[in-house]
Image (cartoon, rainbow, N blue to C red; front, side):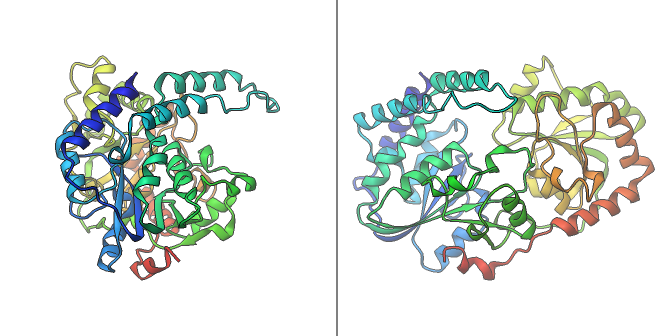
Length: 434
């Protein structure tokens, strides 16, 4: 089983990097569930870009900030990774687990696959095949065991702590639900759980669709912080209680700098998604009209892979030996690509917000495999220009954007930017944990 290999390899490197004494935090702790995607660490304790400079601001206020790391992908240089985590006194669950803890994690993971109630009838829908598929998927991967290991580890690690302010994303996903439930179950301590809603999502992104009864559960945060009124209204529309939401600042984008630069109007930026099937679809459809893109529009294509996706593996799986001559893979950071971008095409990606904030024209390609490909679909009536583009209309859309209606598209997307724009307000940071 892959999960056993995961446990063994991470336990080995945690043991290899272990110092003679465990770090036991005391008193009040600001604990960040920290997504690590690289062994090359930046300055500061928290590495995830989603929290911006908020964790550093807390450190400067004299707060005890600790990272609880998790890894979306298999980071190769584990030795360097754990050395960096040790230097920052991160909370490493492996330090606090024994063999019986690992067995219980796997048992709980297997057991959780049978908690879905199969006998609930949904009018007009037969979801039995879907339930069976996800049960099989859960039984074969037992990936949730990774997060179940938080339960015994947190209890032992927090012995001397009397207050935990816990930060995580708010996307209603497995990784955050397990951690939040675990923290909220520490009844003998003062707990404040905060979820950060960092990007706008489609109305069809079902994890945000909630029932009021769910908010009694320990998997839910006490407070959801978000960038602006538009985010707040969207969350309320999807069922989040109004009193749970605070408008604070756009933490994720606090470090991004929009520059007044000349946009590259001879290049189409292709933003690839976290979802492999989406990437196959977008690359295949663009390859079909590549002759038109190269010869008639005279533009090049620049691919920007998602940080958790292997672009070479994607290309191999498409059966391509090499990319077309007018295609390149970006080696720039996100900020540089966005500042240089005139037009980008994507689907199923929250990057759509960043594109618009950086004065880029965005094309959302309609998917034939997924729903919710347009993360701004809830403003389509107000701004029809943001509607999905079907494959049959892609050539004409590109021709308008790059040749015949350039000023029209620039003006319309400028209006969308004004509508969705957020404040970067560090003066509100002190209100987050209130």
